[in-house]
Length: 288
Image 1 (cartoon, rainbow, N blue to C red):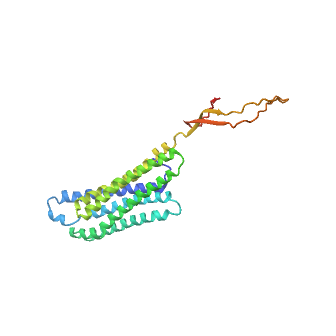
Image 2 (image 1 turned 180 degrees about the vertical axis):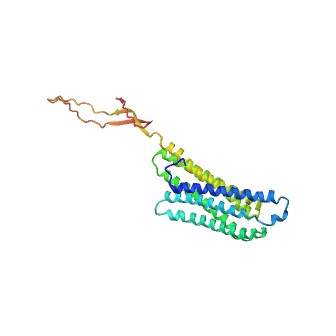
Image 3 (image 1 turned 30 degrees about the vertical axis):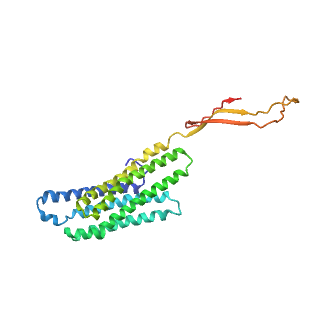
C-alpha cells in the first residue's frame, strides 16, 4: 500500500475487490474452457449452464456493491447534516436491491442449470438487478456533481473552485463508462441476447474496480494541486487627489508643528496586482 495514512477499512476493501475480481476472471476462464475446450463440438453441453458462470456473477456482484457503497459513503460525508440520509438512503437501497436480485438469480441458475431456466431467472431477478444498478449509478453521479458544484459556488478561493471543478470532471468520467455499460446491459437483457449480456457482465466489474482504484490513486495528484503557492496582492501604485492646501494664515507653533486648514477631501486610489508567492509581498510606490 502506497498510502500509509489510509485506514484499515480502505485497505481491506481494496484487497477484497482485488480478490473478488481475480475470482471472477478465474471462473470466467473456467467457463470458457468448459464450453470451448472440454466440450468442444458437443451441442448438448449448451443446454446446461456450468456452475462457474453463476459463481462468477456473484463475485462480480460483490465488486459492484462495494464500489457503489464506497461512493455512497463519500456522498454521505459531503452532504449537509440535515439531508445526509435523504440523499444516501435511496442509493443504498438500490445498491442492496441489486445485490439481492443478483444473488437470487445466481442461486436460481445453480439450482436449475438448464438453459431454459435461465430465461425465468432473467425475468424475475436479473432484469430488476440491472435496473437497480443503473438507478444507483445515476443517483451517485448526480449527487457527486451537485455536491461538488455547490461547494465550489460557496468557496471564495479560485484555487479551491478549480480543484472542485476537476473533481466534478473526474466524477463524470468515472460514472460515464460504467453507466453506459450498465444501460447496455439492461438493453441486451431486455432483448434476451445472452451472449452479449455475458460479455458486458465481464466488462462492467472491471470498470467498477478500476473506477475505485483510480479515485484512490488520484488523491496524491489532487493534493499536489491544492498545495500550491497562495495568491497575494501587491500594491502597484498609490494616487492622491484633492490634497489639502495650506491656508494663508498658516502658523507655526513653538515645537515646529504645522497646522493646515481642511479645504477638501483626499481621494486615495490604490492599484493592486496579484503576486503568486508563499509570503505576501507588499511594495508601495507613491505618486503625487
